[in-house]
Length: 109
Image (cartoon, rainbow, N blue to C red; front, side):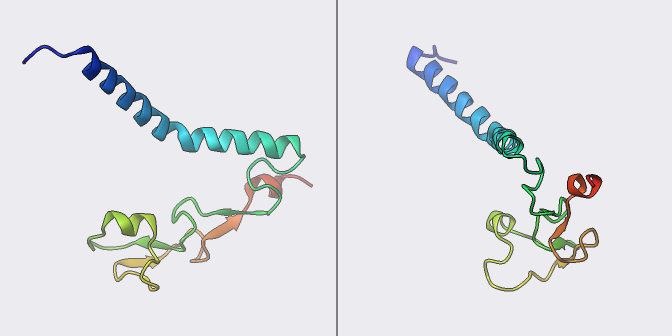
C-alpha cells in the first residue's frame, strides 16, 4: 500500500463525519421536535394529533409478505406506482390504517 496523503486523510475524515451526521439526523430531529412540543405544552410524541404512525408499517398500512423482490425506491415510497405491490399484506398492528392512537395521550386524563 502506498503512502496516504494529508488530503486523502482529510477526505476520509469529512466522509466519516458526513456519514455520522446522516445516521444521527433522524434522532436529532426527533429530539428537537419533542423539545419544541414540550415547550408549547403539546404531547411530546404526537403534538396533540392523538395519532402516530404505525411502528411496524411506518404509516403505509402494508407490510411485506412473502419472498417478493423490492427495489430501494420501493422502500422509500411503496405507493409510487399508485397500487400496492404483489408481495404486500395489510398490517395487523394497525389493521391497515397506517396509524394508531398515541399511547402518551391515552395515559393522560
